[in-house]
Image (cartoon, rainbow, N blue to C red; front, top):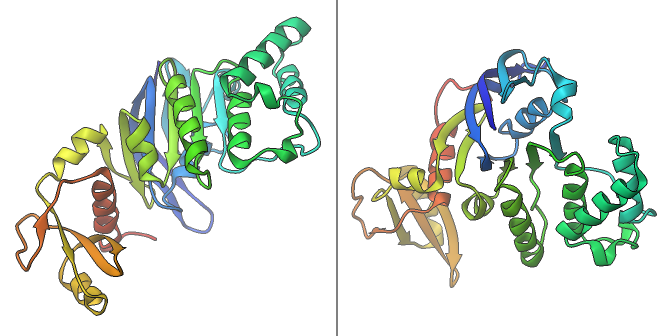
Length: 297
């Protein structure tokens, strides 16, 4: 199964170009869609999920025309949006059973087996009688995945799933998504670079509605090999360095700023070449795009 997006565009009524000729080929496995808030990721996810129309372009999931065969697509689609509501005074088991009924699983034994299986898969079985209002953020996200899997989807879309999760819950979520990605197309939309680095074999970076880069994490890191330099500076020097160099990252160590810059040639001036990371790829592309003239914001 493969998801093919070709020249997809969407402009909102206020003139914002949310998507500009987006083209992607997404095979079975984990695919990471990276971009800052407002980059167009959620617009793309909602369009693929049949929740809004595109102005132009095509999307095909195998032989299914996503934009024309919405009802057929929904039968093989699982979707976990960035924000979703839950009934706080209902147990996970009860709500999942109800949602399975709405999905058309009318046989009671079949429905019970399905709910039990999904609760085990998402590591919620021991908490199945607990009201959802008492769930942690990570448990709610795992419940969201459970409901998204009710129809045994061929395409699973998760939008910013690990934002706000603690490290333990994030690792649990990583393991769950990694397992799911072995057999179906899973699109992980996020602004957290670590999510893509940990999980995805293919990825794309999107900003201001345009695809800036696509490929495997290892391949895109290789593209900037030998072009990332680092230096510890004084706080009062930061603005001057930003004016002179392409500063793609900054952090504090023992109270002093450490900056990473992107340069095709050795900048000298005390900079040390460092091993490039996916974060460097991401920030260099976003930096370059944000400083490109004549781009509609």
